[in-house]
Image (cartoon, rainbow, N blue to C red):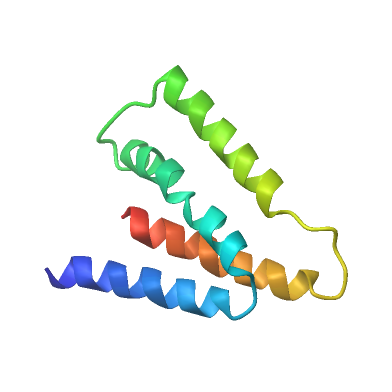
Length: 96
């Protein structure tokens, strides 16, 4: 139980830190990368093989998230990228 609690703590911590510098809508899209992280972690841990359909769907999901979360640039872009990185880390910890 303590190990799972640690992962949830780390995921929530990363999410809260990320929300300080990125919008909630953007954070929601980036957190949905956890659906892509789960099969990739399964492959990395040697527990399952990735099928062509899973690989194609994962690429499509990442492309969709990238399109929906990109902005035009500007002064807030660096801060937003930092927040986005925290949100991606949150998605990773939620998928563990």
